[in-house]
View 1 (cartoon, rainbow, N blue to C red):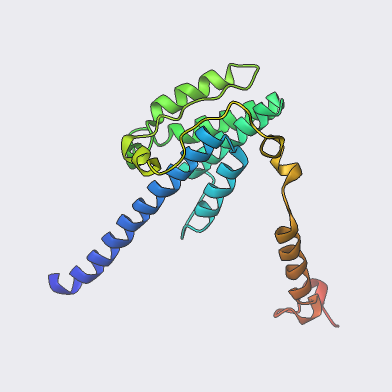
View 2 (view 1 turned 120 degrees about the horizontal axis):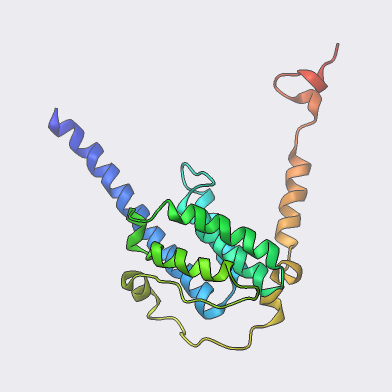
Length: 194
């Protein structure tokens, strides 16, 4: 009985370990975009893609807290203080759920929520340093650590300036490949033929 379960257990442990390693790498990339490039939009994109590719995900996940932190900073820097405070408050609420969890191996979450409090209580944008653990920071050793004081307009207003060709093509393709209602498998409601 034990021998039959061992491969399943090893397989499960391998997937858990590889998931943790992948998340640590993603968090390191997030830290790089957040601190050094201050490209909060890219932080959001990076973590959202990772989050949505998890086998199961909810809006209370750790990744969502970090996504909302980046979103809040994006809004604050653009002068949308109300939107920034709203996103930062949601980020804090979610991240507090993970204090003393296994996510602490990546970031000191209690310290991060204290930093978020300072941002929420501010009427202006402030750059912060994330309390990332040394294990995460070690993955950034090959990156350029120069923090520029000059942020390009294309980063500050990225949602307005980015190339949306790929998004528009995907949307067009989805509409083009959509089946007409009368060909739907159930032929119910709107597709009723009689």
